[in-house]
Length: 314
Image 1 (spheres, one colour):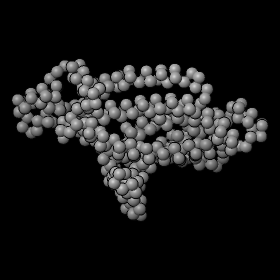
Image 2 (tube, rainbow, N blue to C red; image 1 turned 60 degrees about the horizontal axis):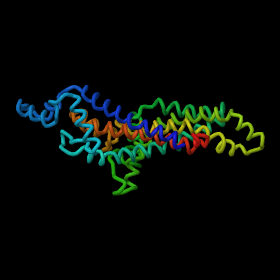
Image 3 (cartoon, rainbow, N blue to C red; image 1 turned 60 degrees about the vertical axis):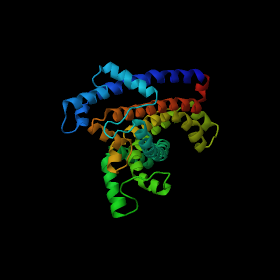
C-alpha cells in the first residue's frame, strides 16, 4: 500500500510542474497587450513602458516564468492587474463558493446516479432499466445553461419557491445559502449523475457475472447482500475513478452555471479576468483548479486501497 501510494505521490510534483508551464505558456497566447488595457485610453508611451517594466513584461518569457513560479512556491500568486488585489485573497474569497456549489452538485449526482445504475443493472432489460437509461440519456443531452434558465422560469418565476439568482455564504445564513445554491447544484449534478449512472451500470453488470457472485448465490446468500456486499464493492473501483475526475470537472465547468445564476465563484472571476487580460488572475485560478484536480486523483488512489483490499499489499 505504501509503495503504491508513494509512487502516486511522487508523480504529483512533476505533474504540477508541467501544469504550471502549460498554464503560463498558454496564457501568453491570449490576444491583446495587458499593458494597453491597464494604461487606459491615453496610452502614453512612457506609461506603457513603466507598466511593462513593473510587470516584467519587458523580460524574456523564460525569465517571466521563473519569476512567476518562484512567487507561486512562496504562496504568492501575484496581484490582479485590474483591481490591484492579491490573487491569493481573490482565490480565498471565491474558491469556497465554487467548492460549495461543486460539493452539493457531486452529492446530488451520487445520490441519483449510483442508485439508478445499480437498479438498472439488477433489473436489466426491464422497465426500470429502460427508464434509468432514458433519464441518463436526457441528462447527458440537456445543456446546463438551458436547464438553468428553465428552472429559474419554473421554480422561481412561476412557483416562487427559490430565489432565481444570487449567493449567500453558509456562515451568514445556511438556510438561505442552500436556497440560493440548490438549483445551480442540481443543474451541475444533472449531467454528472447521468455519467455516473451509466458507468455504475456497466461496472455492476460486469461484477454480477463474476464467479464469486455466482458462488455467493449458490450458497444461498440473500440477493441484497450479494448486490451490496459482493458486487457493488468491486464495481465501485472504476466509479471512484470517474467520480474524482467528474468532481474536478465540476470545479472547472461551473462557468456557465455561475453566470446564469449570478453566483460570484471561480467561473465569474475567470471570465472577467479573461476579458480584461488580467493574466495573474487567470493563471492563479487555472493553477489552483489544476492542483485540486491532481489532488482529487490522488484521493481516488487512496480510496482504491480502502475499497479493494487486494491493493493493500502492493
